[in-house]
Length: 104
Image (cartoon, rainbow, N blue to C red; front, top):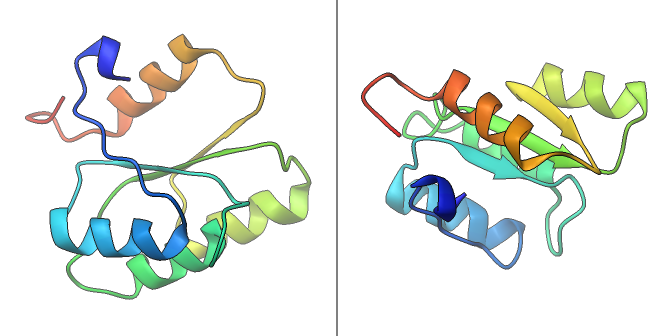
């Protein structure tokens, strides 16, 4: 993502992702479902329930391709899913599609 001109922040686990999102209010968030600490679903649930972070676009990058996982993510407010393995070009295109016009 940095090679494409994006400023990137990296969180080591779900709790750090929440803290960073609340503190920095990123233009977009890329999450995995399976993360140390709270999982990606819990991160989405927490961020969607907070007025400061509820509008951040969220893309799940995940190896979990079961329909039940996709449905759960969409019900929680995930904007898009990308399953592993994925192409960087596809991820960049999806990020650009969800970014506000003035961002990125």
